[in-house]
Length: 453
Image (cartoon, rainbow, N blue to C red; front, top):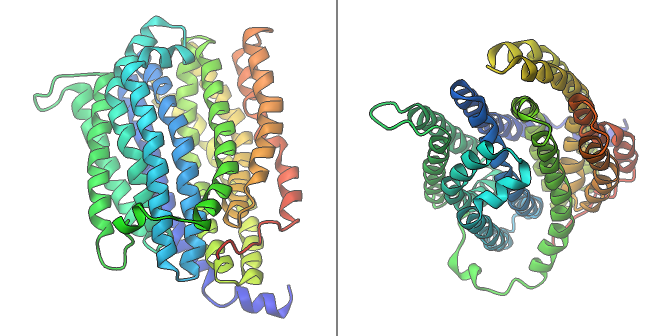
């Protein structure tokens, strides 16, 4: 490392700023993932089918989140650069653009859950009892999907405008409310009738109302960004074009990834109730262990994006090199954590003997898979995207997920009738296989770009 690079990195600014953003967001992600864990434990404690049906039903929100997350990601990519440039007018316009797109997507998914919940469930399973439970869940939870897209735009803007701690506080309190209400509504505490899976949906709806109200109220405080009405109806010109130009590849990538993951769950749903139950638990554990890498991914995007937007391209490049090294180490730690959790999880969750055996195998496969997923998330969604290099994610998913993993899992499920764990391993092959491609693309430094005007 030359003297210039040493000065850029040793200015006692990089690590404190990275940790200031990363730790609250990692904690926020952990709290959000814990809701799914609480649902699985509480519903699984009543009946395995409750847990399986809700796990499949929430795949609808998972797909919705692919759209919303892509919109909020563009808000973060452009927002971080304009915040680094100190251009709050453009930042407010970006906020309003995000709200418009996100509300439209949320409305579509809300209407689908209200008017065709059984049709949505049939996509994921052919078990009539699971379809019936899941459809009842969606009729209630669909209302929360209408609110989620809006609140995520508010929380996303807080992250890029130096308030990651507040987003963590709001999300964490929302999670606590959700978990408490889960217990009350699922089991029927304090005089409330026991509602089972429908209770989990009701708890989600109430907690989302709480989250949205707090987020909107908080945005009007001093030093926060709130969506000014005059920018909601104005012409955005080239800024809207910049938003769409970054959004297009991101939506493609998120849809490839989201629909691919939803397909994986559908394959498990057609392999029997034990496979569905084991996959439900494995997915929750996987999401919990992803929290650290997701926090580092978001922090990387903001820290590097601030420097790129301010015109400090050399500094942004060096920050990227350092974060990649951190990512290589962090991914290994996450894989080890997955191995350590395997006997603990299989002991704590109440499953049939067949489902418990499948869960053990899935956890071992995940210990390898999580290295690739963690490293790729940090590099692609954190470093590449922050500089507008969003096409690579779509290309890599098209090749590795849809060209390899999905076809193998599809054939294994419906044509060759492979064992459950072999099909499950096929669904995990893509993230590990594309690591060399990701590292090769990183060295091209196409992501070192100032996107502001």
